[in-house]
Amino acid sequence: MEQLNRRKLFDVFKPNTNALIYLRGGSVTHRYDTDFEYSFRQESNFLYLTGVQEPDFHVIFDLKDRTWHLVIPKRDAKFAVWMGHVHKPDYYKERFKPDSVLYDEQLELVLSKRKPDLVYCLNVAQAKSLERYKVEVETETLSEALSYCRSIKTPEELDKMRFASDVAGRAHIAAMKRAQTATSEYQVKAAYEFVTSEAGLLHQPYSGIFASGANSAILHYVENNRSFDRNTHFLIDAGAEYQGYAADITRSFPVNGRYSGIYADFYDIVLQALTETTSGARPGVKMEDLHLHACRVILDGLKRIGMLKGNISDMMEVNLFALFFPHGLGHFLGLDTHDVGGYLKGVEPIDRPGLRFLRARRTLEKGMVITIEPGLYIIPALIEPAFTDPVYKSFLQEDALRKQLGFGGIRIEDNLVITENGTDNLTTVPKKRAEIEALLG
Image 1 (tube, helix red, strand yellow):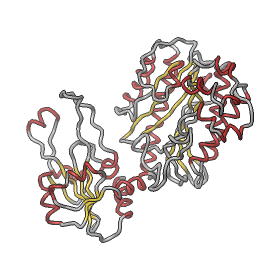
Image 2: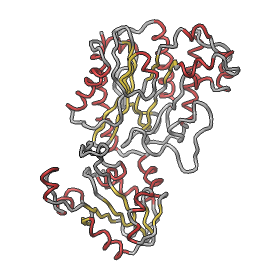
Image 3: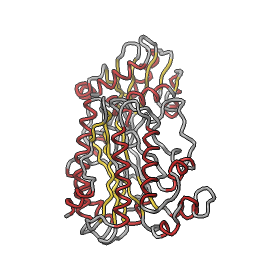
C-alpha cells in the first residue's frame, strides 16, 4: 500500500528534478517533566509513505531517480533493556523495501554527496533541523502535495477504514446497551473502549465524547464523568483506529430505549438532515452546499414543531441556523480524524455564521472519505441572547424554546466513501428510531 502512496507522491512532482523530499517521523512524548511516556503513534504523513510505526525515524525521497531511503536511529544496549529489541538495518531493508537504510549519523554524508538543488520539507521545524547541512529548503509544496494524495483513498486504505468502522460500530452498540444499566458516563466509555481494545485497536483516533443530558450540547465534551439516570438521553461520539486509519461515528439515543416527546421530534429533524445530505453527496457536489441544505432542513423542522416562526428563506438569509447548528456538516477522514485536504490552496473559510467552522470546502470526488454529522443543539449561551437580538427575535418562539434550555443536543454521524454515482456508507450502527428501540429493547 505504501508503495502506491509513494508513487502518487512522486507523480505530483516534476520528473528528473534535482531535488529531495525530507520527512521526519514522530518521537515519543512525555508528560511534562517526567519519564512517563505517552503511547507512541507515528506522524500520519510518515506512516502514509513508509508504514514504519517506530519513533525517531527519517526518510529521504529522491525525485531524480524516484528512490527512497530510510534513515534509522542507532539504538544502544540501554534502549534494548528498557524498550525492547534493537533491529539492524537489514531488518528494515527486508520489511519495508527501501532502496537503502542509513543510520541518522550518515544523513550529512548523503546530503553532501547528493548536493540537491532543493529539499522539500513538511514544515519550518523540519526545515530547521536541516540548517546545519547547508541545503536550500522549501516548506509549502510538500504539505500541499501530501494533502492532495491523501484526500483520495486507495482500495487498501478503504479496507482498513472499513475494519475500523466495523469495530467502532460494535463498540457503539455495546456502549449504548451499557448506558441502560450504567450510572456514570465513564462506565459507558469503559464499555466502548473494552470492545476496541479487545479487537486489538489500542489507539483511539480522538478523545471520545460520552455525554448525558445537557452535556450533549457541548461540542467537544471530554470530561465523561457525570452521573445520570435512565430518564435522560445520551450522545456518543467515538471512533476506532486500525493501522492508523480512523472511524468517527456519533449516535444519540434515550437511555430508557424509547424515543418520545420533544426528543423524538428533535431526533427526526437531525435524521432527516443526515438522510437528505447523504443522498445528495456525490462527485461534483460542494461540501458547503450540503451544509446549507442541512441548515434549511433543521430550520424547517424547528418551525414545523413550533420552535420557530416566519419564512425559512428569511431565516437562512440572517443565518438563524447557526444558533442551533453551530459546527460544520462534516470533514475529511483517513489517517487523521479531521484529515488533510479539506481546503485547497487559496480557498478560504466562508465568513458567515455557522459556516466559518466548516472543516472542508471541497467539490467531492470519487475516492474521498467524508463524515456527515448534522446536529441540533439548544445551547443557552447562543439561544438566550437571541431572544433580545433585533435580527433573530422575530423568528423565535420564545416560550417554547425556553422550556428546552436544559435539553442538550443531538448529533448523528456516518462515514461515507464518495463513489462514482453516490456514496458507500461505512457505518453500520443503527440510526432509525425503530432500529435503536429494538436494539435497546
